[in-house]
Image (cartoon, rainbow, N blue to C red; front, side, top):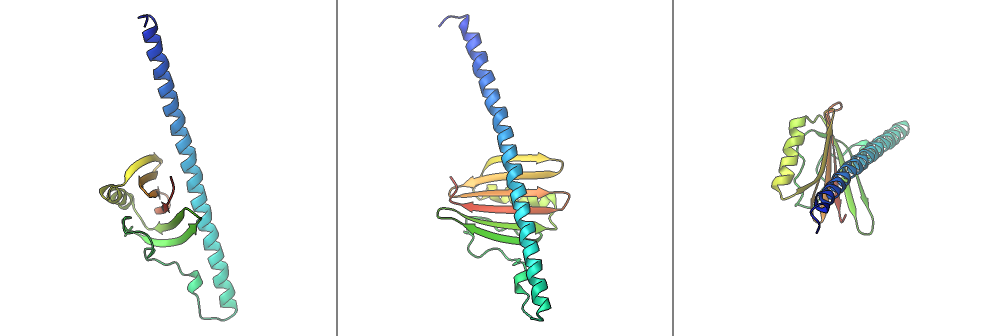
Length: 171
């Protein structure tokens, strides 16, 4: 190869790698922001639905208020490969399932940043590897993976909440 073309080729490759890296950063950032918005929106919708059900039950003078209670315990069907989140208190829970994927989502309140960091360490100690992370203004999102599980953990410093989403079967 011509010695004059080698520096140009290296420069072109470097610019391409940097461009791909910057594009990937913004793609993941937008994906995480969208994902966090969906989790928050779903949680607020579930809370509103639970509150409406509780109000209807109170109006009917029934004693059963279990539909408005959030199960504060860890889902019993979450695989043992996933470390249990033992910090704060559960505020909202949900599950979803398709033909190839199952997702458990739990929102915890009264959680400080150290608890969030400790749980991320627990995941890494259990063999999960980082896929991506993003931190801004005291808010953090960390996504880890250990097949067949992908776990997304979000932290909001303003609300002192953690959103935990465990997906089984994502590729």
